[in-house]
Image (cartoon, rainbow over all chains, first blue to last red; front, side, top):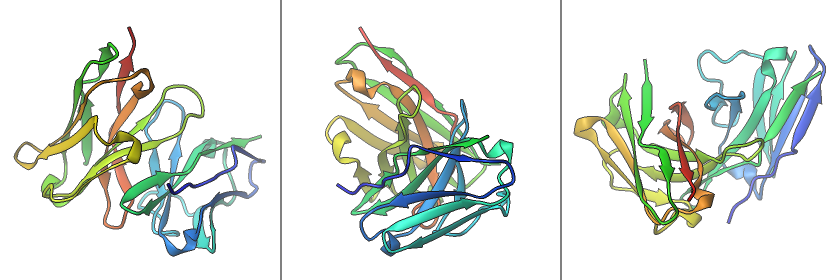
Length: 106
Length: 120
């Protein structure tokens, strides 16, 4: 079965850039989306179709996807961005989520 | 405003069954594919996709590990999505989310979730 791998944690200082990788076999051939989940809340879509931002998502969130790695980038990270982040793709009639990355804003 | 409200969770003994429901409002339910996603309680246990159903129920998909005990269905006249789970196991303990699927394989709206606890 298809797998998406993320680092368990990423730390970033306020105002700096956080990059969260998501790797999978030939991931660049698929559309990737990203979700943010804060404690006790439901996930929220922050990036779809590799790099598109839904309405209401701040411009500091951006995405890219090439080769075997998709990346979520948070520029000018704020304390409110501290959360778990999950990548997701569609493969062989199934949805697959990444293992998740906890972003800590120090 | 899009709203997805799950119900039907609770404490169930191993081997039991449960039917989860999701009431949708704020959009034309019959135009969208819908999904169930679950998340085991506790820190860092991740999201797990369960099942997907197309707008007219023509296409139904399950995660490999969910085939056989899980049945997804919908009633467009009632704007409702359902998930029947049989032969419940301890490892099915999770928050189950009702999720709307966007136009190109992404989940744009999530419900608040309903907790299913399987324990004797």
